[in-house]
Image (tube, rainbow, N blue to C red; front, side):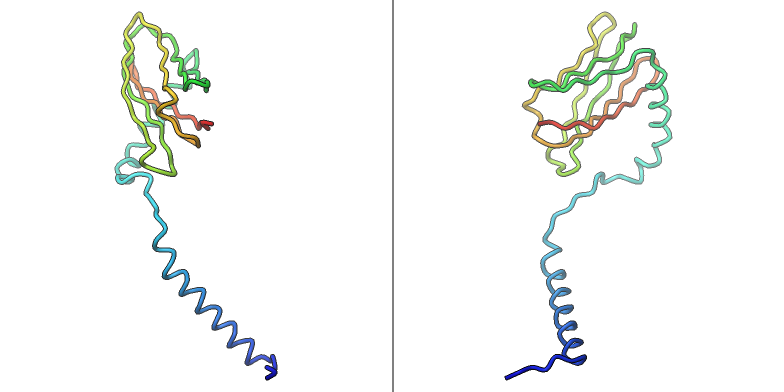
Length: 148
């Protein structure tokens, strides 16, 4: 049997393929997992002016914060200040909420201001390092990191 290909056959075939495609999307794409970056994104957006001010404070520091990626972890050197420093850091992984890591830190007035994140907390991939700390002012620092 020979099928003669004309406009009618082309339109019917394109409609059949389109229906198959829509059915595929309807049944298979809802099973793909997705996560929001934050559950409280509206509240965090309202506080963004505070973060902008904290970033300006970091840019005014005479000695900048330094981040080194070493084979045994991530080393962060804070600028020398004559006050106590307390704050927290977050290693944010956009691909999975389970790989996020947050920890607080305190540095006293006369101590070295060096923070080490050991490699046991890190999995291979991209992270966003977010550091918020306070001395006499509040500071906010972020940097993209690839851990290999």
